[in-house]
Length: 300
Image (cartoon, rainbow, N blue to C red; front, side, top):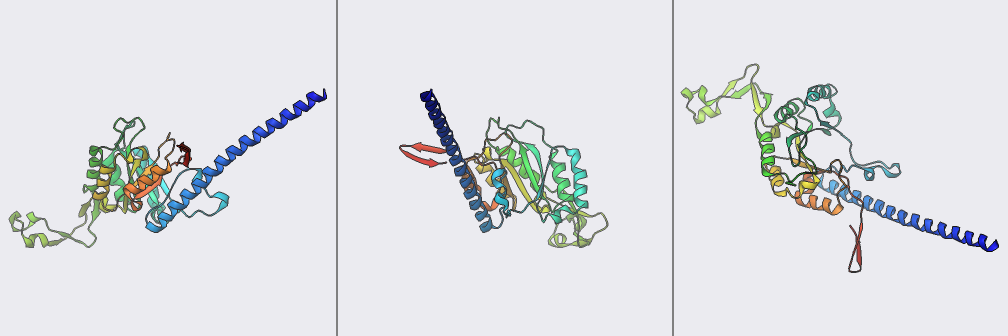
């Protein structure tokens, strides 16, 4: 009986040791992931300070305020419109409360207005969405996106998709009154419809109701194009041309619903491809993993 009791005690001790060792392993992995996340936050925030134009906004637990320390990232409001009939009431309310001024420019109006890679849902009415937002809240950030999903066969934003977005941003459609009470004369108003240097420099006094039409790129304070991180690198040529064609525009690179996360090397490649000054990040960054090859191990 004594030998049996001693054997049971040894078994309990062995089991306790195994559990402790397993917990220690999990704790070590958790600490490694947490330390890695902290390092990435420091790196991205440091780049934001240097560039002066990038706001790092990485969604997830790793962007919370650990130990109740104050966060350095300015908070804002992003409205993601899924139904067009919600747009006008929302814009009216935002105007009423002067949201754009109170949020100091960090008010975003987002919608999927064009079909993108693997789109499953019909987009909002593109021209009407852009026109209403640009006319009623030009101080807000206009966030325009292509509807997409992970089942795309093209795995990229095609040239045709990008050209439709470019045409939308550069087509004069935003009505604005003349601020100074004068407007340029049309060539047909003078010299019997024949244009001349004097005709082109002519001005006439405007009457009530005279307007000029601006492109959304000229009317809005800022335009950003929301793109899925899974397709951003393969679309580098077309998206880079879009950024070059729309003055001051940026990309908002996001990891969508169902994403398993984006590796840190992928994040660095995105920033290297498009430039830190022209990227906003809305990403779930995956936990690091250890890879070993030829006796050498590294954390990816």
